[in-house]
Image (tube, rainbow, N blue to C red):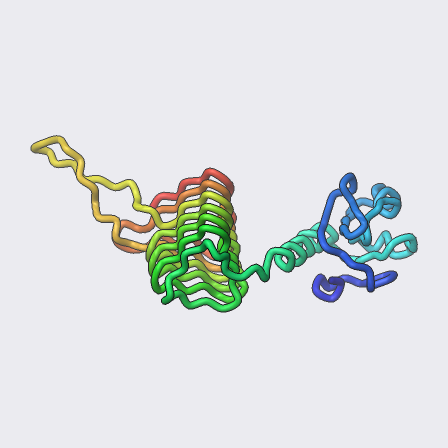
Length: 232
């Protein structure tokens, strides 16, 4: 863990760490972080296996330490490393419906997920329970698609994209043309696509429309909160 986080290890490196936690909920295999010296004593006295801290903690000896110039950032990266290792390795659940034409590497697909024809899923990606992945969708490597996400046909996701539960990607946009003779509104064609670049995170129950004739594009590194609607 110290090597992956580029931290300096002080103390016993053979202990097992399985998850991150707060000081209050620390257990025998949890990892804490301290970015303020006034909280160091409490962290060292906790039940946690190890602590990420700044250089101010380097002389402490009561508990293994991961010394980092940015403890909070190192802790966030540790959470991601430990979380991904715990979640991966389940394979394709027996209740999932996956088309024979799907191309995928080392992927996990949860219960009752439906994956359409000609879908491509990159190595290390996970598809949560109850997801619907439309025909021709492309999902990059290291993506996390949480439960009950719907991805419409023709949508492309880059690498390391996170989509939280209930989001809808690539649905039809809200575009209409009025007939002046009848006063009726008729839908304008919604034939474009949605492209999501690398390292994007999309919050729960958000919706992103595909383009009307061309594309909607979410640029690399964008972070979108819960309940956000992005039109074409």
